[in-house]
Image (cartoon, rainbow, N blue to C red; front, side, top):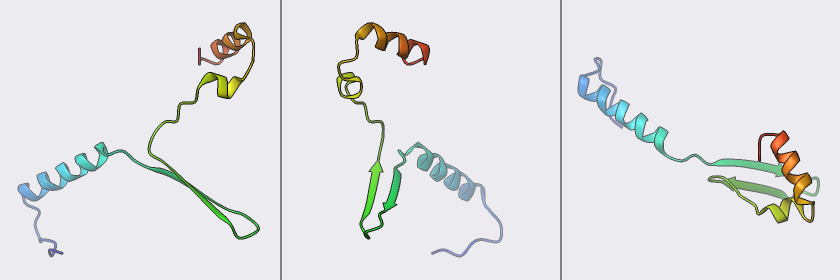
Length: 76
């Protein structure tokens, strides 16, 4: 690792700014860890959105009722 210079040059500043900009453009991962009483551990990692089919979430719910509920909550 390079020692930190006493004065920050314009080149160093631009290089650092470009590195931070590139890092912020990279996708982030979300993770969650759960420890159970029996000593088992569950770790989940996600790199984006999970879109499930309506039928998996709402089953056989009548379409008219489902549309009304989704519209009421801004998800229609």
